[in-house]
Image (cartoon, rainbow, N blue to C red; front, top):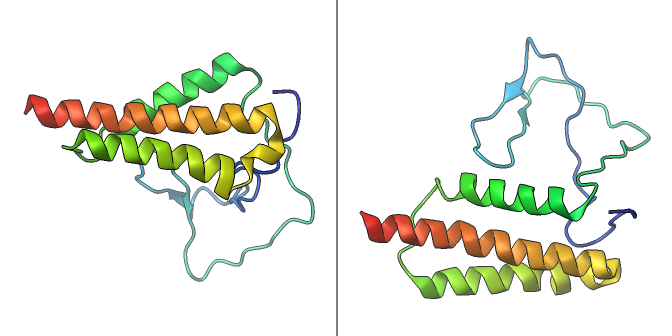
Length: 133
């Protein structure tokens, strides 16, 4: 969204970006999947980081939040609406305060609100699924 985000829980990940596809593969996670590396694999940390523009605009960000909430709703059930509210509020507090999102300015606030929304909708969908069955 026009500027690098340094806080808000973003930018500190050390991810595997280059790997031999015949020896390694993605895990089975529905959300936040990653490359499973074998114990005997030699890993080299690159000296420079990759520029990873996760989202270019607010619409992409909202689409991603809704997609992740839909995928995350498939994991488990939550049968208490109090849990829904607590988890959503904690997502905002974690992003904006604990992870210093306020230092990212309005972008940090947008990320914190989006984390609130994504968590709220993910757990609300789980709650609804619990009540239907």
